[in-house]
Length: 353
Image (cartoon, rainbow, N blue to C red; front, side, top):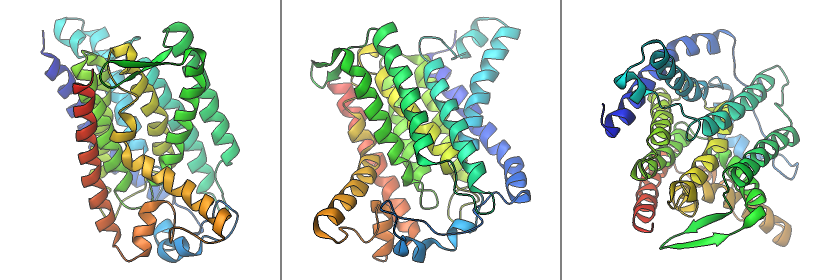
């Protein structure tokens, strides 16, 4: 029988190899079919022209294809399915222990990943058409709310999740309100997907988040879930290998929607279900995702209240670009901060149980 560490690391290593191997094929077809925006430029949330953003990113938006997130979720799906298939064809102690597809720990985050990936893929396909604007925001919100409502009800009705753990031996009882809480949490994370705005930025931030939950799940003996998180992390590292500036492709919505819809599921599964602190530490582990959403909200409130912008551009990473930081500097500093906050979040989760 393999040790638990090996059961996590072998699927992760496999996913990385798969991701790196898939990239040349994906790159060929993305460039062959010119899967990038045909017109650069964005519109601000209030309907006005995002002039500062367009000044900085007019060239970048049409430089590289979208849909790079396929590398992340495809390598994850192939790793999950491959080990499950191998165990079915060649049953035995070793193959069974490497099969981390389980009803109790893996199928729900995998389902969230696939739904988000499909919705984002449709959005990307519509975006790369001539004159395409992508899937309307209202439809993407319907998908996010619908999926998170179903998952929230499953947590409440099927798994009897009615509270979230509070650090240092406490709980916050929510009862049926655990369902809207999960929906709001999913919406907030979905909004953080706009962090995919500079070469390599989102990949590093998301990798730190998933690696953190791999450690947390492993510490709670949720080995299948830990393997899943490690596999997603490996897929992100494979994506980053080709996304170091200048990026070969952008993660875009097929990646960000898949990842942001999966994170709340994993946070809940490492909470009271795993007798741990999975939800309360998420704002710390994902501090830069929180900062991204908060900067957008503050920008809108500030413009409404005072008639001027608080930041040169929102979200925050573009503000740093606007004041003169090169994109590479923003990316590297976000990576460093992501690791620091992830490290702190893991320590809190481990100490506060």
